[in-house]
Image (cartoon, rainbow, N blue to C red; front, side):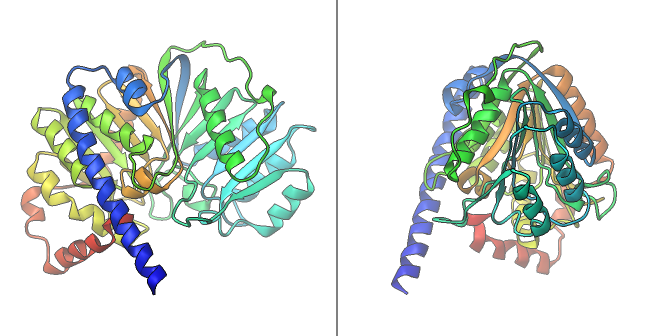
Length: 408
């Protein structure tokens, strides 16, 4: 009992400390966001380098598996995979597994899966991969089972990389237009920031006892593209502000014209809500697209909806995706685009290993904005007057989610 009480007390103390630090961060970012360029905010406040010469290409929904299978087949030097959710014996797990087993002779393959997200990893496939010389490890639940590795980073030859919200599971097959197929967005990356994604994989790999990657895993990357971009690879921090938290606050505070958010687990705490409202009241077009009736976690949906009243009153437009589970984690802020695994909730901003890319690219931002508008065609807008008339039972469910707020 004493141990349980100590854990609960420690958890509450960490939650209070995080709320205080994020409120301070919100005020700081609001002061700087008006005058400091986003690149400077990323380098000085988030602590990540912004690199020139990258090329990024959006990939939506089930098309990611075509891209990954092709890359596995042509890889000549190395295959490095960090994947939160890899499950099942059928497609796409079987397809990706076959591609790895058929890779070019001598190409080392290192795979890191999470103990929780990949709890149902196919044991037969695991046996075949290990027998073939694949080094497969799990992100372990100890000492803290909440600190799961939520990253989705796939790096090939140290020169090409993919990241997003996708998992290797049947939910990501299809186009997100039916309840049994999730809607998601990924990105193919070439250029100097591939080295940052490789380092993020290397960090996670060594955390689970793997040897440091060899020097040839970091080839010299020439900047042939035109996009300035940064990788925000965040790791857990119990009471401090993580890079994931600083990234979201910096991006939101920097918005001048538009701030279009697609986020699958959208449960912003009070300070993040204040930041969104402040930008809306400053004339920024703030829109949020979150999951609706097909949400996979009812408690998270209740926590998401508990934020609506304050956001709607502050001028933020809210939409719920009605076709299926909306699982993307993207953002359009003026002419910049964000794609990755990072959610706008306390889990991603406190407890999880995450990775996202921030790219200053009018072309990519336009493509992501077009995708956002297309998704709105399958969504329902939540209007303030309608929300005020929601049933009592709905209000009770939302209010009860407050108990779990530190973990949502």
